Image 1: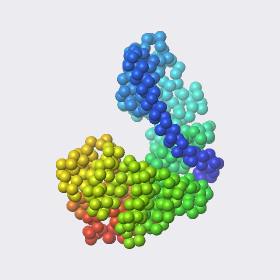
Image 2 (image 1 turned 120 degrees about the vertical axis):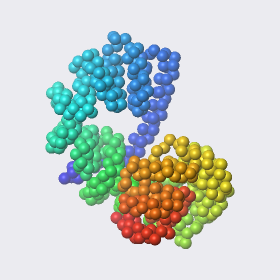
Image 3 (image 1 turned 30 degrees about the horizontal axis):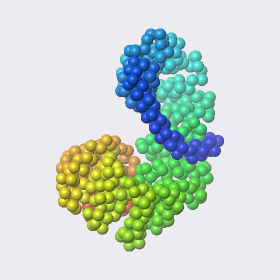
Image 4 (image 1 turned 90 degrees about the vertical axis):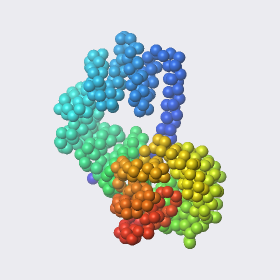
Amino acid sequence: MIIMRIRKFLVLFTVAIVSCTMFQAAAQIEDKMSAAVMKVYDDHIAKNPNDYNTIFMRANQLYVNHNYDAALKDVERTIQLAPTKETELLFDAYMLRATLYELKENYDAALADVEKAAAITPSSLSCIYMKGKLAYDKGEYEAAETQFKSILQRESRNYDAMYCLACVAAKQGKPEDAMAWVNEAVTMYPAESQVYLNRAKVQEMLGQYRDACDTYLIAMSATNDKGTSIGRIVDLAAYHYEDVMASLKSASDENPRVGIFYRVRSAIALSYNHYGQALRDLKAITDNDLLEYYTIYNDEAMCLFQLGDYDQAYNYANKAIASDATNPDGYILRSMIELRQGKGNNYKTAMTTLDQALVLSPDYAPALLAKARLLIAQKKYKDALPLVSKAVECDPSSADALMLRGWLNKYQLKNETAAQADFSRVLTIKNDNINSLKGFALHELGNDHEANAWAEQMIQLYPATGGEAYYYAAALQAAMGNKAQGIKYLESCLANGYGALYEIKLNEDPYVNIAPLRSEPSFKMLLDQSQLNFQER
């Protein structure tokens, strides 16, 4: 059983996950270092435009930074400038250019560069490997298989070649052969995370999504995984949510004292608005003292808030703040909870808590917007406007801030010119996800046809799991007055497991809400049919 094999890795596994934030911090440091290195390269090349060594080093850094067009220009310049005696440099340059051409799907040009590199170093395994990859990319699987097997004839323990052969076998419809190759690599390198990552990718190719998640869980235990497997699990959950959740549940059932299994599962559930499902796992953590840190308490408070249990949500929000009294998000969430406690409309208490958040971080746009929304709920529109304007100044790319200021100016302060300017600015923000709010801006600008196209694009781009794209589409239709279409989107939203009861029943924040749909006769029926979405499970 896969879970039994996981037990051998539990100590390393826990260390790897607890260290994940360290790797994230390291990544941020690496980004800053990369920017500094690029500046050094740029300054040097500006003074020495024919220094092909530095140009090539910059090309490599641009490749690492995923700036492929700029990298291609630099590597081409390197090849033009480097003398023929620089054989090692030219070999590397041809291979880098081949890789860049491959990324652009220019396979013939890539192969031509590989041949040039092979002419310099005929015995290079890198050239053989690249030829195999290019054949695979073109669907020439027998040719690819020949190249990869020739690598194993020289290096029998080359797990990259084994992985490639597994991919070839998967493409040829030979699942047993595919698994045999990746399993052989795992047997040879049982402590190496990459062989497990490779096996999981092959299992995904074969449609074995539950097994793939099981394999990623093992890979997470390796000290050199650096959080890669968590990212792969999250990506897998986007399209195979139930398989991932089942794998994680088996892991937690077999290892009930290992809190990280519950934590990963709850985080995935939260990302898809499955608050009842997330709550079950978060409670398993806190009730059994398995893990303790700010985000667990804060997430539990958010789940309880979205499910309507405000008193319990308040308790966990306080625990979150006690764990990290310097995080403004904890105060923002507690203010939302306080507003709804008891008979509701507890504006004074909620405002006091928001002021605490702003004392901690005066320029924090979410806190400024939360306070503005609290004032809007009390019809204090003129008082809200400076806060929203400050949020725009602090975060010019915040579609939320621009939309809220546009809404205030258009509907409450009757400044149509200012409103139109803000809605137009939303369309210029480089953000193509749901939070771009471009459909809502298009609607306010009178372009409902494009707004509808945006909503449909979001539904196509983002997994149905959790139903969030459908929720935004329903809110957009509600804003347009198209209640019948809004109800259809809401039905799809709930059918895909959307579990934010607060958003469905109560939220009336400007522009993204479904308040107009609540008076429709079918609304209550849809809600009654979807009660499982809002239950701890």
